[in-house]
Length: 578
Image (cartoon, rainbow, N blue to C red; front, side, top):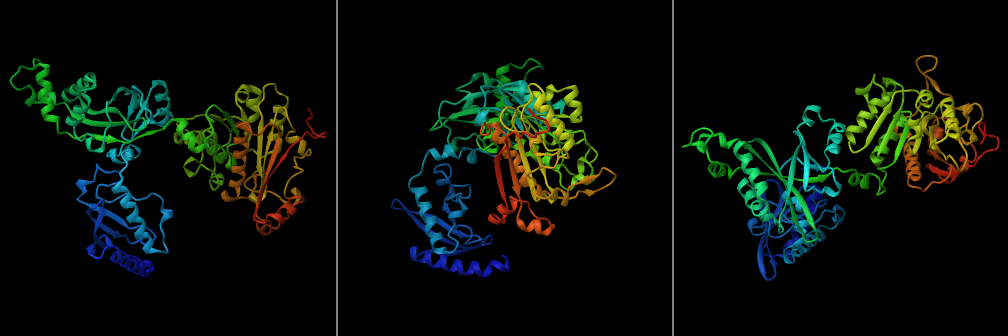
């Protein structure tokens, strides 16, 4: 134990020991090399004394004491929340640990232990099914909502996962997006689900091929026959999916075993000429040889877009939305990354630039992608991380796309431009205002040092456009800092100018841009508006800059930074007009 925590532990453990002596005068302390302090007690449950242990870990009082019941066989798989070593799963909420009151920690775990042992809830076995079921490291991933295994599923297997789907085309597409090898994808097979007639308690979970067959044969002779055939003549893994009823519905699970062609062995063919062994003889003998072979139970989890979206999209469905991100630089890369995590179903990444080491310091892509086209490298990264999405790229300049293939941009619900170059953004704004069928556009850019940033939604019908707030030089009338006082830094070459800022300074603007995107896609924004991020006042002072009015007044009210949103009306002096 670290000397830093030794005194704290000693004082807390002494208080816990006094409390235990008060509650259990016959408590007996014993030594265990893994626990600094431990006691044996007799815990009375419904008038019966149960042998139990209370153990303190080195992190006590930050962690709760552990309670174990003995013998484990009397409780494991009989009462929920009893682990394999007899310890009780008392709580999953670390916040309930009364750190400053060790005596209260003892009282709490004893109260929880009695509640578990005195009034076991049978339904808890169902609620924590996979805590008891899982024994294999290899998960079964299901491409349907809520890990719902289809009655007949297409199955892809590799060394890392088994993947199931009701639709073969969707399974192949998901595997390719996830970077699975084309050769392996050709090995997709079919598995069938067995619906068990009664609840499957932990004590009845199959451990061997014989126990698995005993479960399946009364329900599905067809699948039992397939298992027998694989045991006799097959090699490699065989996957079986099971549906077991529960108190509230059902649970789908998966189990596998490995066969080694027992039917080819001499013990199976003994007494018969080659090729003339009756099937019933083969089946009976092979079963006798393999009945004790172990099976592997797999956890089942959904990788369906709906399931992932409900977490990453804050419960909002963006799977049918299509967004084009124009400009895959530092800001655009993180915006695209967050949109993918948010569950936007289709992303189009547009950029003709190549990633250099100059970019790598603040880009979502790193040194491994230096020398590659940003759009393609970003597509590969996001597609493998989110294979449930459709992600495309265009390695062209915006001018080429608008001239040659404008339909690629007209086919999306929203364009997000993070280019931050006035000439290019002006052309995109002009096209979006004049071209039939052009979608709305969000323009996002960062001011020097990342101390401020803007995201402007240009609605095609209601409100103003980018040019409504800029002069002919592209100076934004609502800029936080004086454009004349914020010069860019020149890098390599005559045109190698850049804005100095780091990732931490950029992320508030990236998050603000994604939030505006989500608000538009979900129907909360129905007209043009502009949002502005103001960094902390001390950052302005560090860089020798002063916020312009009215931002200076806002920072007086919120010196640690703030966000501001306002409608963006049409300006009569707009360079583009309506």
